[in-house]
Length: 168
Image (cartoon, rainbow, N blue to C red; front, side, top):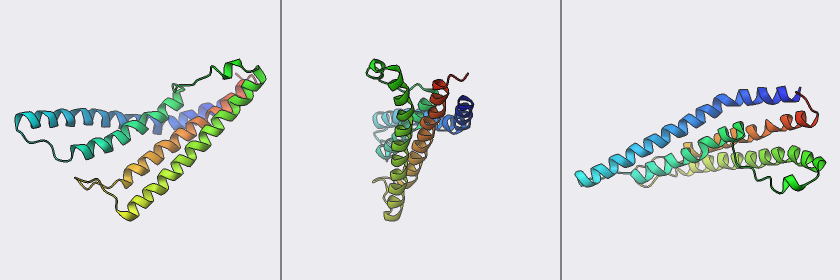
């Protein structure tokens, strides 16, 4: 029952996770192309692309946050278990229940703070210095990415309960 719930949660989160991952890959390709074009224009035509720093900064915000949710869903994030492996089996099981809850709670708080920070940036009209692109949508994107990652970690909780109960 619990492992099925975890599978359903992961399946439901896979679409937004794939979408966020794809968005970050598009941003990565875009930044590679725009920086290459900037270098070419700088050396050949002596005229760099205006606002390349602004574009790079905003793209890196997407590149950093995008793949994290997918990594959490697939379980491919780095887990340092050298200390956890030394504990007795019972304590390991208990900690494996607590860790996803704590990680989800912390990520939910980060998501909430990013959302409120985005609202503040929207109210004060914070923009990039050269191109005047507002930062507000990127804070909302980061909050959404972080919320998906929190839910991805939360989906590990029923899976760990199922492992403890020896469900198949």
